[in-house]
Image (cartoon, rainbow, N blue to C red):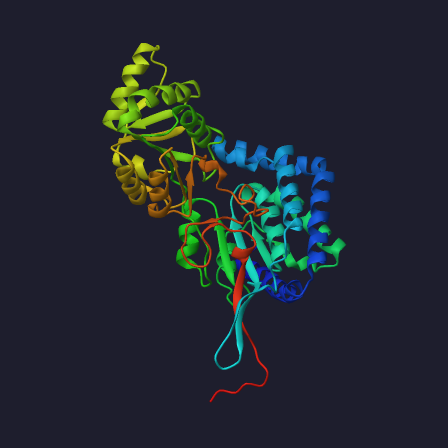
Length: 431
């Protein structure tokens, strides 16, 4: 498909999405929920039919030499399909916020002024690898009364086409326009350039993928972008932490899955507990093959302990770039800090402002961490892996925003809406 035809294709998708968005905006809650329930049913019924398309993508990605974490993101396992199906059902069970009026107040003039929640209109979603994002984006578009144009990565094109067909079937079954969710059918990269430069059709772009992709879109887009560049998440083990709990939470935050953006990449440990805690977590990491990139204090403690236990750990001296690195692999940076002040300062300097956690029994330190750490999600005594729209009860997420305007953190239904002022009067005129 040449560039001219790509432009025609994208313009057609844009016009169809704009038309569909008007119909979606006025669809009532029952119809939108019917589509979501139908989609959940079709996903479960069609799981076996999805497998061959997904297998072709996985086979092609493996042959092309994609890294193991990237190949892992492609897989539509039964667990992944059930999770997105449950997400559709969770969204269907949630209240419909569209048309909700908030903050209505009587003014001295007699008018009443409030704000109504309305759909954004049309959003463009550009994402890599994970085909489950197709369903998450589609289901959120349906619930929020928006239209969506989805452009997945070329490595997942077969899976995305099969999933998009299920979305179209669910929309049709509910009597909603099938053009409300459209998948870009070409893998030509020019399609991305066209999608991010159609302000006449597209109201916001949401990229979800590698740092290079998001930087390119942020630089070239002619419509607003909701974005996060990377996920350099931290866990800080405070002086007063329960060390048994800390081992469990840090292990989960790092090793439950290496590829997500909410996996922990940095571990900070208070100096007063480092001699006890680091050997314990070091043994866990060594058993799981996690490379530890350490500051001098952490390296000394871990190497001394490792020498007593056969020298199986991979302990490397950290360099400056390690503190800001998103590894997405079995690697973690480790630094010993004096206390909560140094931990907060380190996180605010090096983190990507995605998700950071403190493990502590000190209420004051917990409150300081919550207030002072400048991240989209901040946690106390919980794994960073919970930074997820499904886990937060949003039904699904379309991404995690580290921006500070419009949406921050997991972007669910409300992140895909806007507010407009509404005024109710009884014939008042301004004097």
